[in-house]
Length: 294
Ligand SMILES: [Cu+2]
Image (tube, rainbow, N blue to C red; front, side, top):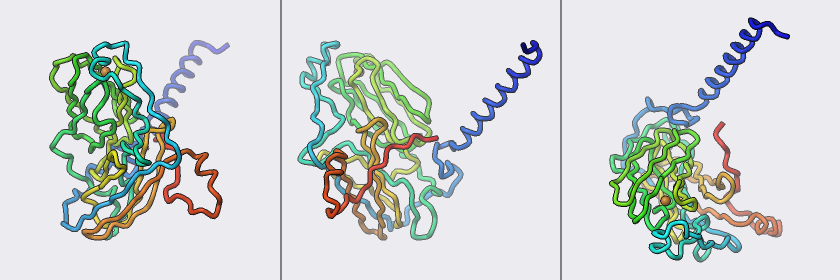
């Protein structure tokens, strides 16, 4: 048996060890949760007037999972306002995928600097997340870190919006029908933050938080455009919520000065892809399971 004193020392030792693990762990996260350095003190990017765009389409191969009808009977206000509410995990129309978060992950500008070395101004205009018909509009939202998000309740019922991030503080607020808008912001980059409603378990949205504004969300026809991209060579990622932590597709683009680069992405069942004869061209974007940050 250990003496009382020895146990005390052991306890202290364990505490110190745990604390050092915790601090070394948090060191991998910069203030902006970005391994590139969280360079709040980095050079401020100013437009040179030569920025270009990345445009593309997000497609789905094979038969997409069917949207399922949601049972809203727990809240009559939801049933009467949205009698035909369906799941939004895969919004596929004519083989084109909506609600895909497409963003520039990393890359090098033509002057040799890294995109992660620059800081971008936080937009002064708030992004809006509306609770309308007992679902979120939009379903996928992109913001710059520290940008205000205005949360509105357009329904005749109470919602309780709940951000469940990994790199940002948990946040949840009840919002009664008729209550004014709430404001929230996420200070640390995180792709993507799941949002749910504590009142209505089917309500889900995703907020992509980046240190720069170089992102877009695919529209109903699968199209997207990332504007204001400094000329350079970039890794572009398309994130979709399908899968445990979402699914990422990656591709490389070169954006010419004042020009446009194309980045097309294809999602779909892996069985479908595995079934392809080897002579067939492989889809340009590879499937990478979403990596959980440290
Ligand atoms: Cu709700």
